[in-house]
Length: 105
Image 1 (cartoon, one colour):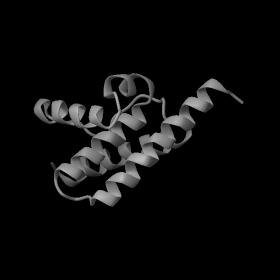
Image 2 (cartoon, helix red, strand yellow):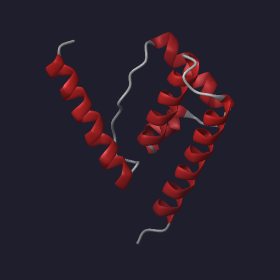
Image 3 (tube, helix red, strand yellow):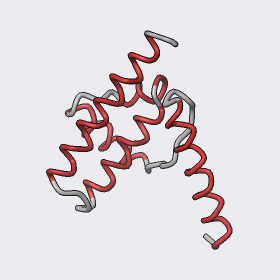
Image 4 (cartoon, one colour):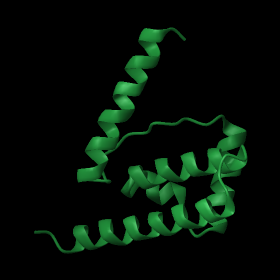
């Protein structure tokens, strides 16, 4: 992958993140996992109470964040305390998005 491609990918990721700050329901994904990793990630997420199929449809920003957390955790790049904090923040984001969806305006 050359420098221009990496810059384009980074630009798209930044665009999605900005969009998701306003509305986590907007479709998109910043990470694609190979099939075996996707299956492992789905199991990991389910054990923590996250249904990636549902999140992919309803809150793509949250499912994307789950995948990134799994990747960092599976590679030893995140401590248990960091993982606990990130999972708690995801749960808050889901509640906030659900509240905003149920109570517009």
